Image 1: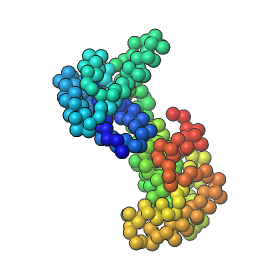
Image 2: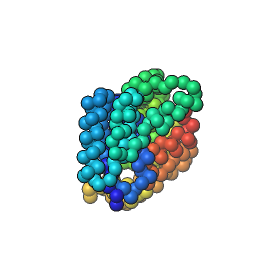
Image 3: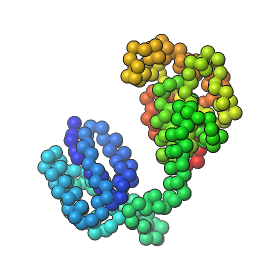
Image 4: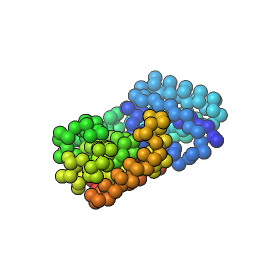
Length: 268
């Protein structure tokens, strides 16, 4: 296992640089120690970053990786005097695109938020909606939901809903299917008029048993037998209602969200 330090250096929040960090997942044989340095927007802060890069190189014995999002050319060039491997958002992506479009790109901190404008505000509104409609907390305003996730307790509805809201601005509500629904043999009545918005999540019984056991060890709720019965019944209810579902057992929220967006044809 290789050991490297990766720096995320930005003149703003570092969210964009952090997103580029997903590239590191393609190299599982390397153990990356992550150092985040947001708001690095002066020469003094750049000098401090260079000192940290030098120290990391001496400590790990290998060149650090620097993922950077610095709009100021002087700060960019000064930082690059360090002995590191650089992934530069502007040199690699923004500047070449500007040449192709024959336009000078904006380079100030926070440009991503300001350019998105309404899109950013839409995401904030979607996040508030999703948090207020988590776990069937309220039926008020449910007609505004763009997606309603259903499934047994602890199958991944909440993190997937929040990711849809944060990443795509989708107003996502979620409802747990509970023993009362199973005894009644029907979905909650409030959902009947929203079937076109519903997407289901399921999960392997063994995985659900493990997840629930962390929360309520040794309980009937977490027992493998109960998990099997709930999942089978939930899938039958969704099948009878014509609801599409996906298995969350080995899928990340990113994968689940992509499946939901594709199958429900939600615009990004």
